Amino acid sequence: MAGKNNQRSNSRIFLFFFLLAFSLLLFLFSLSPLRTPSSPSPTHFHVPIAETSFVASLDHFLAHAQTSLKDHTARDVTKLDDAVFRSETDRLYSDPYYPVSLPLRVYVYDMPPKFTHDLLWLFKNTYRDTSNLTSNGSPVHRLIEQHSIDYWLWADLIAPQSERLLTSVVRVHRQEEADLFYIPFFTTISFFLMEKQQCKALYREALKWITDQPAWKRSGGRDHILPVHHPWSFKSVRRYVKNAIWLLPDMDSTGNWYKPGQVYLEKDLILPYVPNVDLCDAKCLSETNPKRSTLLFFRGRLKRNAGGKIRSKLGAELSGADGVVIEEGTAGEGGKEAAQRGMRKSLFCLSPAGDTPSSARLFDAIVSGCIPVIISDELELPFEGILDYRKIAVFISSNDAVKPGWLLKYLKGIRPAHIKEMQQNLAKYSRHFLYSSPALPLGPEDLVWKMMAGKVVNIKLHTRRSQRVVEGSRSQCTCECRPGNITNTASIIS
Image (cartoon, rainbow, N blue to C red):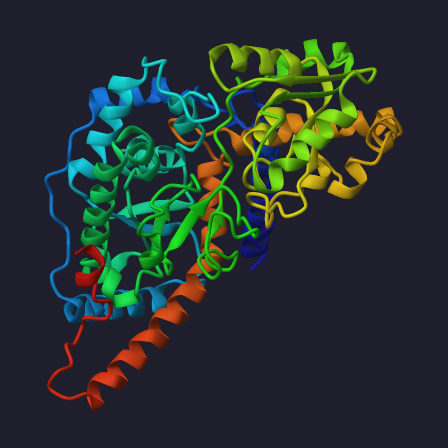
Protein backbone atom coordinates (compact mmCIF):
# COMPACT_ATOMS: atom_id res chain seq x y z
CA MET A 1 0.00 0.00 0.00
CA ALA A 2 2.87 2.32 0.91
CA GLY A 3 4.49 1.53 -2.47
CA LYS A 4 1.40 2.61 -4.32
CA ASN A 5 1.33 5.88 -2.38
CA ASN A 6 4.99 6.49 -3.25
CA GLN A 7 4.25 5.83 -6.94
CA ARG A 8 1.38 8.32 -6.90
CA SER A 9 3.56 10.89 -5.16
CA ASN A 10 6.34 10.38 -7.71
CA SER A 11 3.81 10.69 -10.55
CA ARG A 12 2.52 14.01 -9.22
CA ILE A 13 6.07 15.34 -8.83
CA PHE A 14 6.89 14.24 -12.41
CA LEU A 15 3.71 15.86 -13.75
CA PHE A 16 4.50 19.08 -11.89
CA PHE A 17 8.01 19.34 -13.34
CA PHE A 18 6.75 18.36 -16.83
CA LEU A 19 4.21 21.17 -16.81
CA LEU A 20 6.79 23.60 -15.46
CA ALA A 21 9.27 22.67 -18.20
CA PHE A 22 6.56 22.90 -20.92
CA SER A 23 5.53 26.36 -19.72
CA LEU A 24 9.16 27.48 -19.75
CA LEU A 25 9.59 26.23 -23.31
CA LEU A 26 6.48 28.12 -24.45
CA PHE A 27 7.77 31.29 -22.83
CA LEU A 28 11.19 30.97 -24.47
CA PHE A 29 9.59 30.22 -27.84
CA SER A 30 7.50 33.35 -27.58
CA LEU A 31 10.70 35.36 -27.24
CA SER A 32 12.38 33.67 -30.18
CA PRO A 33 13.10 35.80 -33.30
CA LEU A 34 12.07 32.78 -35.38
CA ARG A 35 8.39 33.10 -34.50
CA THR A 36 5.89 33.97 -37.23
CA PRO A 37 5.51 37.75 -37.55
CA SER A 38 2.14 39.27 -36.72
CA SER A 39 -0.14 40.59 -39.46
CA PRO A 40 0.64 44.13 -40.60
CA SER A 41 -1.50 46.93 -39.28
CA PRO A 42 -4.26 48.07 -41.67
CA THR A 43 -2.78 51.56 -41.53
CA HIS A 44 0.41 50.22 -43.17
CA PHE A 45 -1.41 48.85 -46.22
CA HIS A 46 1.00 47.94 -49.01
CA VAL A 47 -0.11 49.48 -52.31
CA PRO A 48 1.26 47.56 -55.30
CA ILE A 49 2.55 49.41 -58.32
CA ALA A 50 -0.41 50.18 -60.57
CA GLU A 51 -0.82 52.01 -63.87
CA THR A 52 -3.11 55.05 -63.61
CA SER A 53 -2.61 56.43 -67.13
CA PHE A 54 -5.52 55.53 -69.40
CA VAL A 55 -3.37 55.57 -72.54
CA ALA A 56 -0.58 53.43 -71.05
CA SER A 57 -3.01 50.96 -69.53
CA LEU A 58 -4.95 50.72 -72.79
CA ASP A 59 -1.77 50.03 -74.78
CA HIS A 60 -0.96 47.09 -72.50
CA PHE A 61 -4.56 45.87 -72.53
CA LEU A 62 -4.87 45.83 -76.32
CA ALA A 63 -1.45 44.19 -76.72
CA HIS A 64 -2.59 41.26 -74.58
CA ALA A 65 -6.33 41.22 -75.24
CA GLN A 66 -8.06 38.36 -77.00
CA THR A 67 -11.56 38.91 -78.27
CA SER A 68 -13.78 36.34 -76.58
CA LEU A 69 -15.44 33.89 -78.93
CA LYS A 70 -17.36 32.13 -76.17
CA ASP A 71 -21.13 32.38 -76.09
CA HIS A 72 -22.54 32.15 -72.58
CA THR A 73 -25.86 33.74 -73.50
CA ALA A 74 -28.97 31.98 -72.24
CA ARG A 75 -31.53 31.17 -74.91
CA ASP A 76 -34.80 31.08 -73.01
CA VAL A 77 -36.26 33.38 -70.35
CA THR A 78 -38.17 30.59 -68.59
CA LYS A 79 -35.14 28.31 -68.36
CA LEU A 80 -33.01 31.20 -67.07
CA ASP A 81 -35.66 32.06 -64.48
CA ASP A 82 -35.73 28.46 -63.22
CA ALA A 83 -31.92 28.36 -63.06
CA VAL A 84 -31.86 31.65 -61.12
CA PHE A 85 -34.38 30.25 -58.63
CA ARG A 86 -32.24 27.17 -57.98
CA SER A 87 -29.05 29.23 -57.64
CA GLU A 88 -30.60 31.78 -55.27
CA THR A 89 -32.16 29.04 -53.13
CA ASP A 90 -28.75 27.41 -52.73
CA ARG A 91 -27.21 30.75 -51.71
CA LEU A 92 -30.08 31.48 -49.31
CA TYR A 93 -29.36 28.33 -47.31
CA SER A 94 -25.56 28.55 -47.48
CA ASP A 95 -24.88 32.27 -46.89
CA PRO A 96 -26.43 33.88 -43.78
CA TYR A 97 -25.86 37.40 -45.18
CA TYR A 98 -27.30 36.81 -48.66
CA PRO A 99 -28.38 38.82 -50.67
CA VAL A 100 -26.25 41.77 -49.47
CA SER A 101 -22.96 40.00 -48.83
CA LEU A 102 -19.80 40.60 -50.82
CA PRO A 103 -18.37 39.70 -53.21
CA LEU A 104 -21.00 40.73 -55.70
CA ARG A 105 -21.34 38.29 -58.56
CA VAL A 106 -21.27 40.05 -61.92
CA TYR A 107 -21.87 38.54 -65.34
CA VAL A 108 -20.02 40.41 -68.11
CA TYR A 109 -21.64 40.17 -71.52
CA ASP A 110 -19.48 38.97 -74.41
CA MET A 111 -20.66 41.65 -76.81
CA PRO A 112 -19.51 41.70 -80.46
CA PRO A 113 -16.13 43.46 -80.93
CA LYS A 114 -17.72 46.44 -82.71
CA PHE A 115 -19.12 47.51 -79.32
CA THR A 116 -15.93 46.89 -77.34
CA HIS A 117 -12.43 46.17 -78.73
CA ASP A 118 -12.98 47.93 -82.06
CA LEU A 119 -13.84 51.17 -80.26
CA LEU A 120 -10.77 50.92 -78.04
CA TRP A 121 -8.62 50.45 -81.14
CA LEU A 122 -10.34 53.48 -82.71
CA PHE A 123 -9.26 55.58 -79.74
CA LYS A 124 -5.71 54.22 -79.76
CA ASN A 125 -5.24 54.74 -83.51
CA THR A 126 -6.49 58.34 -83.44
CA TYR A 127 -5.03 59.48 -80.11
CA ARG A 128 -2.27 61.55 -81.72
CA ASP A 129 -4.80 63.53 -83.77
CA THR A 130 -4.43 66.99 -82.23
CA SER A 131 -6.96 68.60 -84.58
CA ASN A 132 -9.93 66.74 -83.11
CA LEU A 133 -11.43 69.36 -80.78
CA THR A 134 -14.81 69.99 -79.20
CA SER A 135 -16.79 73.14 -79.98
CA ASN A 136 -15.11 75.00 -77.08
CA GLY A 137 -11.59 73.97 -78.11
CA SER A 138 -11.00 71.05 -75.72
CA PRO A 139 -9.19 67.99 -77.14
CA VAL A 140 -11.71 65.19 -77.73
CA HIS A 141 -9.35 62.40 -76.65
CA ARG A 142 -8.61 64.17 -73.36
CA LEU A 143 -12.36 64.46 -72.79
CA ILE A 144 -12.78 60.73 -73.44
CA GLU A 145 -10.05 59.99 -70.89
CA GLN A 146 -11.96 61.99 -68.26
CA HIS A 147 -14.98 59.74 -68.80
CA SER A 148 -13.14 56.42 -69.31
CA ILE A 149 -14.72 54.74 -66.29
CA ASP A 150 -16.24 52.13 -68.66
CA TYR A 151 -12.73 50.95 -69.59
CA TRP A 152 -11.38 50.74 -66.03
CA LEU A 153 -14.32 48.74 -64.69
CA TRP A 154 -14.45 46.35 -67.65
CA ALA A 155 -10.69 45.76 -67.74
CA ASP A 156 -10.74 44.78 -64.09
CA LEU A 157 -13.79 42.52 -64.37
CA ILE A 158 -12.43 40.49 -67.29
CA ALA A 159 -8.86 40.22 -66.00
CA PRO A 160 -7.74 36.72 -64.90
CA GLN A 161 -8.78 36.22 -61.29
CA SER A 162 -5.15 35.50 -60.35
CA GLU A 163 -4.23 39.06 -61.42
CA ARG A 164 -7.07 40.84 -59.64
CA LEU A 165 -6.75 42.49 -56.21
CA LEU A 166 -10.39 43.34 -55.45
CA THR A 167 -12.45 41.08 -53.20
CA SER A 168 -15.68 43.08 -53.43
CA VAL A 169 -16.66 41.67 -56.83
CA VAL A 170 -16.14 38.47 -58.79
CA ARG A 171 -16.97 37.67 -62.39
CA VAL A 172 -19.27 34.69 -62.96
CA HIS A 173 -19.74 32.82 -66.23
CA ARG A 174 -23.23 31.49 -65.60
CA GLN A 175 -26.07 34.00 -65.78
CA GLU A 176 -28.12 32.28 -63.09
CA GLU A 177 -25.33 32.96 -60.56
CA ALA A 178 -25.20 36.70 -61.23
CA ASP A 179 -26.38 39.48 -58.95
CA LEU A 180 -25.75 42.03 -61.71
CA PHE A 181 -25.01 42.14 -65.44
CA TYR A 182 -22.36 44.46 -66.90
CA ILE A 183 -22.81 45.90 -70.41
CA PRO A 184 -19.32 46.67 -71.84
CA PHE A 185 -20.33 49.16 -74.54
CA PHE A 186 -18.06 52.20 -74.95
CA THR A 187 -20.75 54.82 -75.40
CA THR A 188 -18.46 57.87 -75.01
CA ILE A 189 -15.78 56.78 -77.48
CA SER A 190 -18.41 56.01 -80.11
CA PHE A 191 -20.12 59.37 -79.59
CA PHE A 192 -16.98 61.49 -80.01
CA LEU A 193 -15.00 59.50 -82.59
CA MET A 194 -17.65 58.23 -84.99
CA GLU A 195 -19.57 60.17 -87.61
CA LYS A 196 -22.96 61.24 -86.23
CA GLN A 197 -25.24 58.96 -88.26
CA GLN A 198 -22.81 56.04 -87.96
CA CYS A 199 -22.82 56.48 -84.20
CA LYS A 200 -26.62 56.57 -84.00
CA ALA A 201 -26.79 53.39 -86.08
CA LEU A 202 -24.35 51.69 -83.71
CA TYR A 203 -26.43 52.84 -80.74
CA ARG A 204 -29.53 51.25 -82.26
CA GLU A 205 -27.65 48.01 -82.88
CA ALA A 206 -26.37 47.98 -79.31
CA LEU A 207 -29.86 48.67 -77.99
CA LYS A 208 -31.31 45.72 -79.89
CA TRP A 209 -28.49 43.42 -78.80
CA ILE A 210 -28.91 44.37 -75.12
CA THR A 211 -32.70 44.22 -74.96
CA ASP A 212 -32.78 40.89 -76.83
CA GLN A 213 -30.91 39.19 -73.98
CA PRO A 214 -33.09 36.88 -71.86
CA ALA A 215 -31.60 38.26 -68.65
CA TRP A 216 -32.67 41.76 -69.71
CA LYS A 217 -36.18 40.57 -70.52
CA ARG A 218 -36.43 38.75 -67.19
CA SER A 219 -35.71 41.87 -65.10
CA GLY A 220 -36.63 44.64 -67.52
CA GLY A 221 -32.96 45.65 -67.28
CA ARG A 222 -33.06 46.59 -63.59
CA ASP A 223 -30.07 44.38 -62.72
CA HIS A 224 -27.99 45.60 -65.70
CA ILE A 225 -25.18 48.17 -65.40
CA LEU A 226 -24.80 50.63 -68.27
CA PRO A 227 -21.86 53.12 -68.32
CA VAL A 228 -23.11 56.44 -69.71
CA HIS A 229 -20.64 58.68 -67.94
CA HIS A 230 -20.64 61.50 -70.47
CA PRO A 231 -24.03 63.28 -70.47
CA TRP A 232 -24.25 63.08 -74.28
CA SER A 233 -23.41 59.39 -74.57
CA PHE A 234 -26.15 56.98 -75.72
CA LYS A 235 -28.51 59.96 -75.66
CA SER A 236 -30.55 59.09 -78.77
CA VAL A 237 -31.76 55.73 -77.39
CA ARG A 238 -31.19 55.76 -73.65
CA ARG A 239 -34.84 56.43 -72.84
CA TYR A 240 -35.42 52.77 -73.77
CA VAL A 241 -32.96 51.54 -71.14
CA LYS A 242 -33.99 53.84 -68.28
CA ASN A 243 -34.56 50.88 -65.91
CA ALA A 244 -30.87 49.95 -65.99
CA ILE A 245 -28.32 51.16 -63.45
CA TRP A 246 -26.58 54.08 -65.12
CA LEU A 247 -23.03 55.04 -64.18
CA LEU A 248 -23.06 58.84 -64.26
CA PRO A 249 -20.90 61.91 -63.51
CA ASP A 250 -23.81 63.51 -61.59
CA MET A 251 -27.60 63.56 -61.38
CA ASP A 252 -28.07 66.85 -63.28
CA SER A 253 -31.27 67.83 -61.52
CA THR A 254 -31.49 70.85 -63.86
CA GLY A 255 -33.01 68.62 -66.54
CA ASN A 256 -30.69 69.89 -69.26
CA TRP A 257 -29.00 66.53 -69.91
CA TYR A 258 -31.31 63.84 -68.54
CA LYS A 259 -35.08 63.73 -68.84
CA PRO A 260 -37.21 63.63 -65.66
CA GLY A 261 -37.48 60.10 -64.34
CA GLN A 262 -34.42 58.81 -66.20
CA VAL A 263 -31.88 59.23 -63.39
CA TYR A 264 -32.19 59.15 -59.60
CA LEU A 265 -29.98 58.17 -56.68
CA GLU A 266 -31.98 55.09 -55.65
CA LYS A 267 -31.29 53.51 -59.06
CA ASP A 268 -28.09 54.99 -60.48
CA LEU A 269 -24.53 55.50 -59.29
CA ILE A 270 -22.29 58.57 -59.54
CA LEU A 271 -18.64 57.91 -60.38
CA PRO A 272 -15.73 60.36 -60.22
CA TYR A 273 -14.13 61.67 -63.38
CA VAL A 274 -10.68 60.35 -64.20
CA PRO A 275 -8.25 63.09 -63.02
CA ASN A 276 -6.50 65.07 -65.75
CA VAL A 277 -3.41 65.72 -63.63
CA ASP A 278 -0.85 63.44 -62.01
CA LEU A 279 -1.10 62.36 -58.39
CA CYS A 280 0.85 64.49 -55.93
CA ASP A 281 2.09 61.63 -53.73
CA ALA A 282 3.41 61.76 -50.17
CA LYS A 283 6.85 63.00 -51.25
CA CYS A 284 5.27 65.63 -53.52
CA LEU A 285 2.94 66.82 -50.74
CA SER A 286 5.77 67.12 -48.23
CA GLU A 287 7.59 69.38 -50.69
CA THR A 288 4.66 71.46 -51.95
CA ASN A 289 2.45 71.98 -48.87
CA PRO A 290 4.86 74.36 -47.07
CA LYS A 291 5.24 76.40 -50.31
CA ARG A 292 1.57 76.89 -51.27
CA SER A 293 1.61 80.67 -51.63
CA THR A 294 -1.55 81.11 -53.75
CA LEU A 295 -4.75 81.39 -51.71
CA LEU A 296 -7.23 80.41 -54.47
CA PHE A 297 -6.61 78.96 -57.94
CA PHE A 298 -8.79 78.31 -60.98
CA ARG A 299 -7.92 77.35 -64.53
CA GLY A 300 -10.57 76.39 -67.08
CA ARG A 301 -13.33 77.68 -69.28
CA LEU A 302 -15.01 80.72 -67.75
CA LYS A 303 -17.99 80.66 -70.10
CA ARG A 304 -20.21 77.60 -69.65
CA ASN A 305 -23.89 76.81 -70.11
CA ALA A 306 -26.68 76.08 -67.62
CA GLY A 307 -25.43 76.01 -64.00
CA GLY A 308 -21.92 76.78 -65.22
CA LYS A 309 -22.85 80.43 -65.80
CA ILE A 310 -21.68 81.03 -62.23
CA ARG A 311 -18.12 80.81 -63.56
CA SER A 312 -18.20 84.11 -65.41
CA LYS A 313 -19.64 85.84 -62.33
CA LEU A 314 -16.91 84.37 -60.13
CA GLY A 315 -14.27 85.38 -62.66
CA ALA A 316 -15.50 88.97 -62.63
CA GLU A 317 -15.64 89.04 -58.82
CA LEU A 318 -12.25 87.41 -58.12
CA SER A 319 -10.07 88.51 -61.02
CA GLY A 320 -7.13 90.64 -59.89
CA ALA A 321 -7.67 90.00 -56.17
CA ASP A 322 -4.59 89.52 -54.02
CA GLY A 323 -3.60 85.86 -53.67
CA VAL A 324 -6.01 84.71 -56.41
CA VAL A 325 -5.09 83.20 -59.79
CA ILE A 326 -7.88 82.93 -62.39
CA GLU A 327 -6.80 81.57 -65.79
CA GLU A 328 -8.72 80.81 -68.96
CA GLY A 329 -7.63 77.47 -70.43
CA THR A 330 -8.52 74.08 -71.88
CA ALA A 331 -7.58 70.50 -71.07
CA GLY A 332 -4.83 70.03 -73.66
CA GLU A 333 -1.32 68.87 -72.79
CA GLY A 334 -0.15 72.42 -72.08
CA GLY A 335 -3.32 73.03 -70.11
CA LYS A 336 -2.69 69.94 -68.01
CA GLU A 337 0.81 71.11 -67.06
CA ALA A 338 -0.41 74.62 -66.23
CA ALA A 339 -3.32 73.33 -64.13
CA GLN A 340 -1.10 70.85 -62.30
CA ARG A 341 1.52 73.48 -61.56
CA GLY A 342 -1.09 75.99 -60.32
CA MET A 343 -2.92 73.50 -58.11
CA ARG A 344 0.28 72.37 -56.41
CA LYS A 345 1.09 75.98 -55.53
CA SER A 346 -2.33 76.73 -54.03
CA LEU A 347 -4.12 76.21 -50.71
CA PHE A 348 -7.62 76.26 -52.23
CA CYS A 349 -8.87 75.33 -55.71
CA LEU A 350 -12.12 76.78 -57.03
CA SER A 351 -14.54 74.07 -58.22
CA PRO A 352 -17.68 75.68 -59.67
CA ALA A 353 -20.33 73.89 -61.71
CA GLY A 354 -19.67 73.27 -65.40
CA ASP A 355 -22.29 72.57 -68.05
CA THR A 356 -23.47 69.96 -65.55
CA PRO A 357 -23.28 70.32 -61.73
CA SER A 358 -20.02 68.31 -61.67
CA SER A 359 -16.57 69.01 -63.04
CA ALA A 360 -13.37 67.00 -63.48
CA ARG A 361 -11.59 69.92 -61.78
CA LEU A 362 -12.80 68.71 -58.38
CA PHE A 363 -10.89 65.44 -58.68
CA ASP A 364 -7.84 67.19 -60.14
CA ALA A 365 -7.74 69.31 -56.98
CA ILE A 366 -8.10 66.30 -54.66
CA VAL A 367 -5.17 64.39 -56.16
CA SER A 368 -3.11 67.62 -56.19
CA GLY A 369 -3.52 68.20 -52.46
CA CYS A 370 -5.44 71.45 -53.10
CA ILE A 371 -8.54 71.93 -50.93
CA PRO A 372 -11.60 72.13 -53.25
CA VAL A 373 -13.97 75.07 -52.85
CA ILE A 374 -17.19 73.59 -54.23
CA ILE A 375 -19.70 76.08 -55.62
CA SER A 376 -22.42 73.95 -57.18
CA ASP A 377 -25.80 73.97 -55.43
CA GLU A 378 -27.17 70.89 -57.23
CA LEU A 379 -24.08 68.69 -57.01
CA GLU A 380 -24.34 65.04 -55.91
CA LEU A 381 -20.90 63.56 -55.17
CA PRO A 382 -19.51 60.06 -55.82
CA PHE A 383 -19.61 57.56 -52.95
CA GLU A 384 -21.27 59.99 -50.52
CA GLY A 385 -22.63 57.01 -48.62
CA ILE A 386 -19.03 56.06 -47.79
CA LEU A 387 -16.90 59.21 -47.98
CA ASP A 388 -17.35 62.38 -45.90
CA TYR A 389 -16.41 65.27 -48.19
CA ARG A 390 -16.63 67.79 -45.35
CA LYS A 391 -13.23 66.47 -44.25
CA ILE A 392 -11.53 67.52 -47.49
CA ALA A 393 -13.57 70.31 -49.10
CA VAL A 394 -15.27 73.65 -48.46
CA PHE A 395 -18.89 74.03 -49.63
CA ILE A 396 -20.13 77.50 -50.58
CA SER A 397 -23.58 78.44 -51.88
CA SER A 398 -23.73 80.25 -55.21
CA ASN A 399 -25.44 83.26 -53.61
CA ASP A 400 -22.68 83.71 -51.03
CA ALA A 401 -19.87 83.09 -53.52
CA VAL A 402 -20.74 86.06 -55.75
CA LYS A 403 -21.22 88.57 -52.93
CA PRO A 404 -18.48 91.21 -53.18
CA GLY A 405 -15.54 90.20 -50.99
CA TRP A 406 -17.43 87.42 -49.20
CA LEU A 407 -15.61 84.35 -50.51
CA LEU A 408 -12.05 85.58 -49.93
CA LYS A 409 -12.92 86.81 -46.44
CA TYR A 410 -14.34 83.40 -45.62
CA LEU A 411 -11.31 81.49 -46.91
CA LYS A 412 -8.85 83.78 -45.10
CA GLY A 413 -10.79 83.15 -41.88
CA ILE A 414 -10.23 79.38 -41.91
CA ARG A 415 -7.81 78.44 -39.14
CA PRO A 416 -4.36 77.16 -40.22
CA ALA A 417 -4.85 74.06 -38.03
CA HIS A 418 -8.07 73.25 -39.92
CA ILE A 419 -6.33 73.75 -43.28
CA LYS A 420 -3.56 71.37 -42.23
CA GLU A 421 -6.12 68.78 -41.13
CA MET A 422 -7.91 68.95 -44.49
CA GLN A 423 -4.58 68.63 -46.33
CA GLN A 424 -3.80 65.49 -44.33
CA ASN A 425 -7.23 64.10 -45.18
CA LEU A 426 -6.69 64.85 -48.87
CA ALA A 427 -3.53 62.73 -48.77
CA LYS A 428 -5.61 59.83 -47.43
CA TYR A 429 -8.63 60.37 -49.72
CA SER A 430 -6.78 60.66 -53.03
CA ARG A 431 -6.59 56.86 -53.42
CA HIS A 432 -10.41 56.76 -53.67
CA PHE A 433 -10.30 58.72 -56.95
CA LEU A 434 -7.44 57.03 -58.82
CA TYR A 435 -8.55 54.47 -61.39
CA SER A 436 -5.79 51.96 -62.01
CA SER A 437 -4.71 48.70 -63.55
CA PRO A 438 -4.86 46.51 -61.59
CA ALA A 439 -7.74 48.07 -59.67
CA LEU A 440 -6.70 48.66 -56.06
CA PRO A 441 -8.60 48.03 -52.81
CA LEU A 442 -10.44 51.23 -51.79
CA GLY A 443 -9.88 52.69 -55.26
CA PRO A 444 -12.93 53.98 -57.19
CA GLU A 445 -13.55 50.61 -58.85
CA ASP A 446 -13.73 48.95 -55.43
CA LEU A 447 -16.05 51.62 -54.00
CA VAL A 448 -18.38 51.15 -56.98
CA TRP A 449 -19.09 47.58 -55.91
CA LYS A 450 -19.36 48.46 -52.24
CA MET A 451 -22.01 51.04 -53.14
CA MET A 452 -23.66 48.69 -55.61
CA ALA A 453 -24.20 46.02 -52.92
CA GLY A 454 -26.79 48.24 -51.30
CA LYS A 455 -28.84 48.30 -54.51
CA VAL A 456 -29.02 44.54 -55.03
CA VAL A 457 -31.82 43.88 -52.52
CA ASN A 458 -34.12 46.48 -54.08
CA ILE A 459 -33.31 45.23 -57.57
CA LYS A 460 -34.23 41.65 -56.68
CA LEU A 461 -37.44 42.74 -54.97
CA HIS A 462 -38.49 44.88 -57.93
CA THR A 463 -37.62 42.10 -60.41
CA ARG A 464 -39.72 39.53 -58.55
CA ARG A 465 -42.67 41.88 -58.30
CA SER A 466 -42.42 42.57 -62.03
CA GLN A 467 -42.24 38.84 -62.76
CA ARG A 468 -45.30 38.27 -60.59
CA VAL A 469 -47.25 40.92 -62.52
CA VAL A 470 -46.12 39.44 -65.86
CA GLU A 471 -47.08 35.91 -64.80
CA GLY A 472 -50.47 37.16 -63.64
CA SER A 473 -51.12 38.93 -66.93
CA ARG A 474 -50.10 35.83 -68.89
CA SER A 475 -52.59 33.68 -67.07
CA GLN A 476 -55.39 36.08 -68.06
CA CYS A 477 -54.32 37.00 -71.60
CA THR A 478 -55.75 35.73 -74.85
CA CYS A 479 -53.93 33.86 -77.58
CA GLU A 480 -52.41 37.13 -78.84
CA CYS A 481 -50.18 37.35 -75.74
CA ARG A 482 -46.51 36.49 -76.24
CA PRO A 483 -45.01 35.02 -73.04
CA GLY A 484 -41.55 36.32 -72.28
CA ASN A 485 -41.79 39.35 -74.54
CA ILE A 486 -41.70 41.87 -71.73
CA THR A 487 -40.14 44.64 -73.79
CA ASN A 488 -40.75 44.83 -77.51
CA THR A 489 -37.91 46.75 -79.17
CA ALA A 490 -38.80 46.06 -82.79
CA SER A 491 -40.39 49.48 -83.22
CA ILE A 492 -37.51 51.17 -81.40
CA ILE A 493 -34.78 50.15 -83.80
CA SER A 494 -36.70 50.30 -87.04
